[in-house]
Length: 75
Image 1 (cartoon, rainbow, N blue to C red):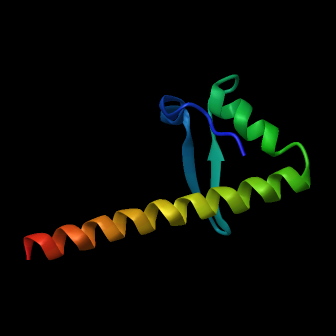
Image 2 (cartoon, rainbow, N blue to C red):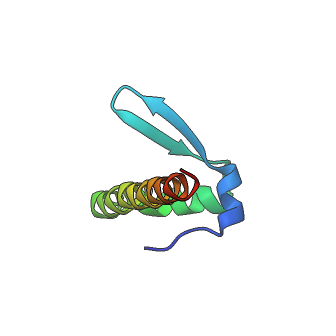
Image 3 (cartoon, helix red, strand yellow):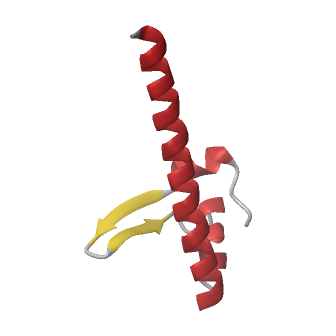
């Protein structure tokens, strides 16, 4: 899976919905092109959703682990 440049995520908007969340971005922006690509087919959308959620989980785990380690060090 490809990802936009990290600075491009400044354009990404996350909106909470009844079923989870929705991602959007300004038309023509790098994030908008990225989102449009993965919405072209159901298979691409499923790949995106699975990878995006897994990436969020991994980032959360790293953050929690780092915070736990820091607390143990400072404790």
